[in-house]
Length: 338
Image (cartoon, rainbow, N blue to C red; front, side):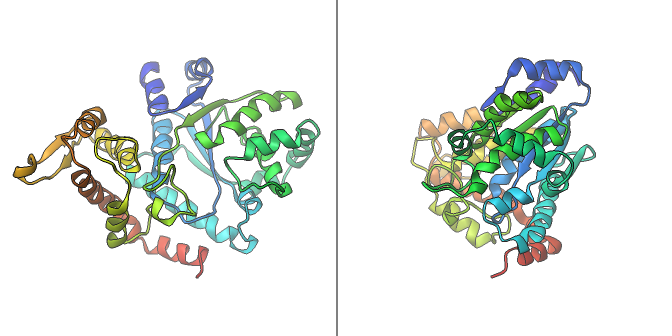
């Protein structure tokens, strides 16, 4: 694969790269660069996890060795009961593998690492202390604000979080970190503070935040804003039917699902996105690009209900393997006891 193709794969649908020049240099000088993406095994996994999985798929296709950090200790710092960490970590790993299989990407260059495997060994804790001597409470609170639960009187755990995430880049021995826009402040902290204790800054690859079905973003605390991987068909239909989707306004969660998930899957499989309608409402229409669909939606040639019906069909089809995965169902039941 040539440089241009690799670069376009890595950067499609991104919010930002810090920095683009460093990413280009990395791709030109290293045949198999490495990158990590971290996730805390906290709440039950939602459809939103497909967004980072698609980028991980892009990175794998572009020749990266990808490490997925199952950040169990970070999850504990964020309030997950210690006795559930192991079960939730196992559930997350199984769900992520299933998602990548559904996408259809070779995972031979994918590696899972538990946070506790690297964070409780060697000089990791020593380096946490080294960073703590040069990092103010203000900068730690600011860096973690969009990632962990904070308050006027934050727990010490939330202040340690950005120090650990910065050091994960070092101890995972990667060239880059991938994350969402909510991680940006921690990534900037890492680039600024790691060199102060003798480590090089990494390339930071950042995706945009995706709107929820209701409200600004998908949230585990707002049930109606997200679709769980294991939601049944009736629940999926209900959530999409109730989702915000004002006629002519593309700034909503349904359009985000189409742009960042459905159209990417369709284009990678060389399939159109089909919206079935009665002839009296314009008949069935096929879209081969998101731009075509957005234009018709803005011009009010494509109505919210028709779009929602088509999205519902795609989501039900996409999540069927998860509802039928008995191992995943059992792991979920153990990880999230009633």
